Image (cartoon, rainbow, N blue to C red; front, side, top):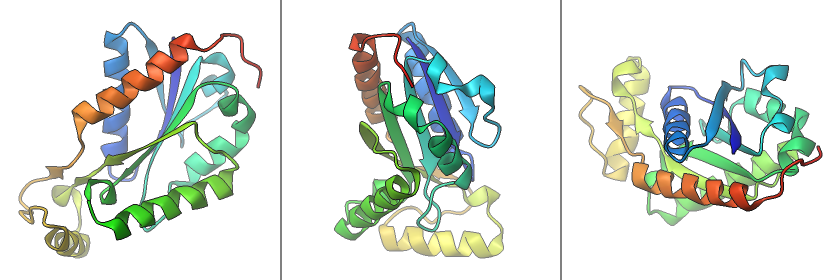
Length: 186
C-alpha cells in the first residue's frame, strides 16, 4: 500500500506523529510519503496513493490554513480512497467533557470549511513544548497545564501522545486500505 500523509504543524508534534505513523506502517511493509502541507506540490497528488491521512494540530480552535487549502484542492481524490484525519491537540489528553465538545466543534468547523468528512477521525494528544516557548507563552501553557493536572515543570517538554493507541489506529487504517479496491478515480 502507498499512503500519503500530509501534515500541518505549529510546534513540531504533528510532524513527529506523522513520522511515527510512517515508520509504523513501513514495518508492516507499506510505503508512506510524508509531506508538509506548506510544501505540498503536485508531487503530493493523492491520486497517486492508495490511502490518504491528513494530520493537523489545533491552535486557538483552528487547524493550519495550509491543511485547509490542501484538502479543498484535493477533495475528490481524498474522498475516492481510504482516508483519515489525525487531529492533534492538548485537549485530546483530557477526560473533560467540555474539552471533548470543543474538539468536536473544531472538527465540525474544519469539515464545514473544507467540505471533507473524513472516513476516520482520531484525536491524538499533543505535547507541552515548554523549552521552545517564549516567556509569555510558557506562562500561559503552564497555567493550562496546572488546570489540567499536567506537569508544570518548564525545564523540560511533556509529551502526552499515546503512541501505542496511535499504532493501533494506523493498523486499522492500513488494514482497511489493504482491503479496498485499487485504481480509484478522483
